[in-house]
Image: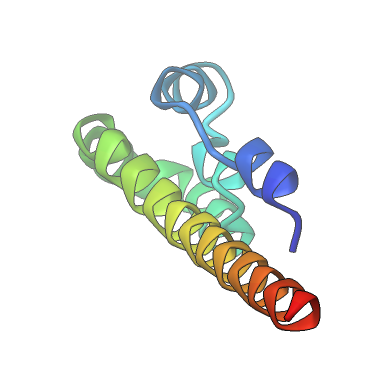
Length: 95
């Protein structure tokens, strides 16, 4: 996985609210197509689900971004370890 790709997958709360307000497609924005189709079929849970989401969109976006941030952190750790190993091999070769 590429770090730049993962950064592009981070989502904005404002955009999620805009998707919710204009098209009701905030789950699609977060990549949860199964929930999105169910949301549309039930017409937003006849409005109850839509009202619930009004207050929970920030936590849904944060959860999505947390997973991606953890993946970015893992990639950065891996890069640091590889860099340290390269430096150790270089020092060993110089001796």
